[in-house]
Length: 292
Image (cartoon, rainbow, N blue to C red):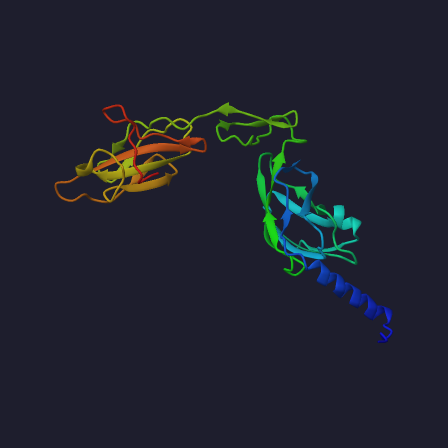
């Protein structure tokens, strides 16, 4: 049989379609990943890589990535690593703050091996200690011909280039007042979960309750129960939780049934831990599942 002559344009299309079919023949998934240890100082330009493993047979990847626009500003996306070796091209869309849309595709040959395929250049705008999740909201490889497993990343604003004494966050919830020094974030004052609150009182209206602030507490919980169901806990229909209170007061207009009464207990919370409701007369801690 004689094969008719094809002009170069049609021959190129035929070769590309053939490559696409071969590339989509893979059935195993590829992991598309962003690093979870990316970092840079405020004002710096930082390149964050996108990687794929394995990359064999990949001819194109379309992906959307989100990030915190208050921490980072995407500047550009460039082809790199194994994609640059194979002559890939990329079309990025960076017009929406906090969102990057990327189409990366082969000009001729599919990827070979595993590794970096692109770099996102960010301008760091956040303060030291601020973080931004780097999240794949979608990714399609070879138009879904190859399953994609998405491995999200994290960017942390470091103390690089920051003036000594600049506030930062060392990542340890049990320290406060962390500051930059020598280009690193130094731990501040250690804290623990708040101690037991003290001096709960009720106002004359019998609906307003207050207590003394507990050291290092950033918010408070109050649990209310019926006096007929004492001791406190383990939790049940007689108890109500007033959680995540910003201050040391509570207004509760509820009125107990005639001949009954309410009890109230408060505790402090902070990022390091949850305080205590105190102890029973036998020395065991008070606990209830109503405010877990």
